[in-house]
Length: 54
Image (cartoon, rainbow, N blue to C red; front, side, top):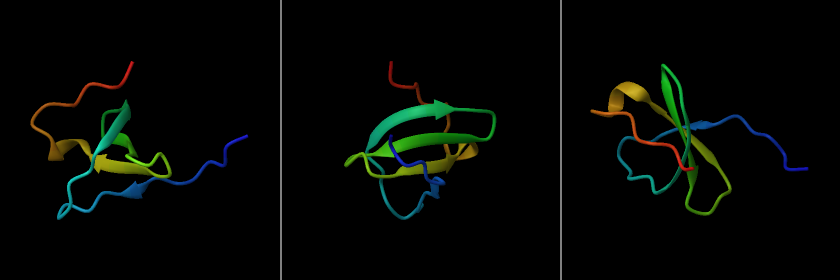
């Protein structure tokens, strides 16, 4: 079983590349490129909520 971890907040000075896992009313959750972390972005940082990976 995979270990669950608390998502880390995004660093606004960096660009994050990875799969969008989930979007809710406050945050966008993104898996990093290496698949090792989940990054939490504030939804209001986006003009439009990004689509989740299907």
